[in-house]
Length: 262
Image 1 (cartoon, rainbow, N blue to C red):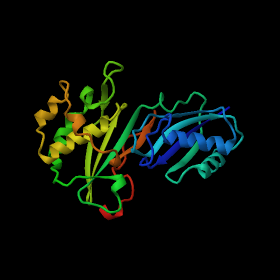
Image 2 (tube, rainbow, N blue to C red):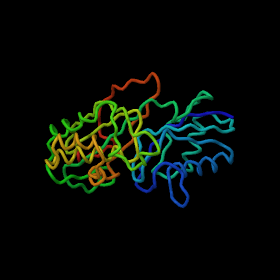
Image 3 (cartoon, rainbow, N blue to C red):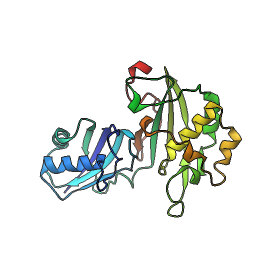
Image 4 (tube, rainbow, N blue to C red):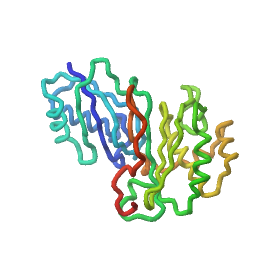
């Protein structure tokens, strides 16, 4: 058996998230099917670095594949890509140590969220159009509240009783690129719907509908407000999965070339 590290990009619009589910089309399910077809193997392990929700995209999801094959990595990449739909693509396949685990070895993940300041005919699947004006200074003030090791129990759809809701979040970046507002959230890991709810709260603050103190209060007790403010999946991209030795210093750019908005 050989172990490979896969780097995968996908548009999540047509899929019910990454993880294989019964009676639902998922990204992992499509890759699993493509591997079976390309290699004619049935006994292999395909494991992603983490789940992405329905409709969420990825610029560089990481997975590991353990399979019996004599194909070199690039041949495996080409053969599997030939069997994949056009909205899923293996960017890279490389040999990996036998002990490499896509999820357990990851030390951080970063997501980029794209907000459009205007209506768009071409980029609807990849942005959230916010009609109201946004005060980026207020958004940054609110974002600063989430830096550090905090309890995000009000920001997740997970059951708090089932696992810890404490997450270490690095300083959140907010930038402009033409008619886009870009938000990058990097953390040790993320809870279900957490990034979309953080974005929703930041946007509400930017609209003027939430004060900094009100946002701070969301970290201090149970609240249904983050759930009500959840940002749509369309604007969210898994940007990068970090492993030991990788630096964090990288420019914040639009996740896809939305030319009309830049």
